[in-house]
Amino acid sequence: MTASIRSSIACAFLFLLALAALGRMIPLAVLGLYLLASCIAYIAYAIDKSAAQKNQWRTAESTLHGLALIGGWPGALLAQNRLRHKSRKMSFQLVFWTTVLLNCGALGWLLTASGGKAIRAAIGLA
Image (tube, rainbow, N blue to C red; front, top):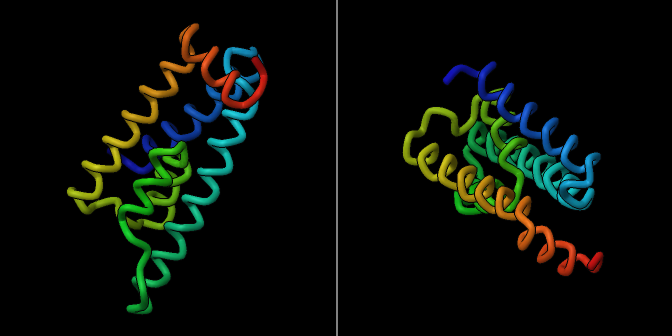
């Protein structure tokens, strides 16, 4: 998959998420979580790339995957492409794309009636 396709996937996802939030299909807080987690993930990738180049302490891959799982995968995907970091390691990519699928599945559930009710109750809007 080319870098432009990966970047397009991340941007399109965030755009559609923003439309869903503006259309009140999901709470605005969900969009906020994705944006915050994506920024943190991008920064974590940048720190890890810098550490790799300097032969210093590295960010654990489990931390990078955890950030992707909680909604930071668009930022992680952008970082992989722009920073050229963790984009070719197949074992990392397999786990990364698994976290993307799990996250998107959870988001899909939130768009159902029962999922929407659960998230609104969790953030105090029900």
